[in-house]
Length: 229
Image 1: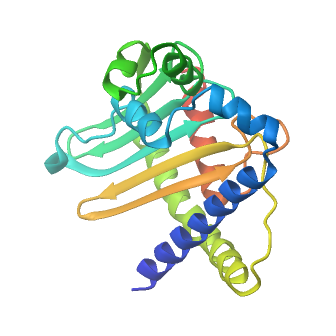
Image 2: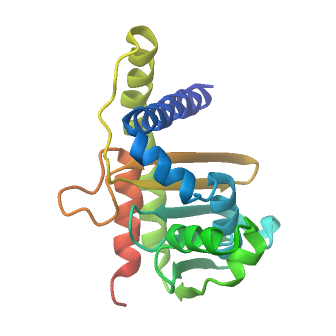
């Protein structure tokens, strides 16, 4: 019961933050910027995420043999997107990293849209190359990630919930990062599922690993996966 309330509070607060980002971006555009946007069409968020789902699979091939799975997706401001899948199965552990070999996918999609005038996720995905890398990770490391995830979830949801409640009461503004990144996270264990869409400092920002505890956890996992084995 308490876990359900925490998750709902987190998602509600995150939804408010995303609305604030959209509101600030909409209000900050000048007439000149609006003319530029009209002359240079921008890919829709739905198509962008659909392309990422095609390029970075997150469907479990055999849920009956899965104990738990994490999917960490990184969408930086101006760097190639990537994804890490951590799957603890009944018979083995799998860690797979997906990275774009063609740079920033969002930029590539906008170039394609401007060139063809068509927003077809399946066709657009065919033009982008992806590197898939399987990583050997010992179970103690998987267990450490698992424990750290729930520690981050427990310590990070209260501030988000309080921030959302404060915004409801005051209608106040929120400080955002003009060049931040988006972090998507999915977790599934049997019939229990959670998902988060977070906005924080950009990937590899030298000043910080993130303001949010879950983003800090995601970046820690990403750094561990990137270490030479």
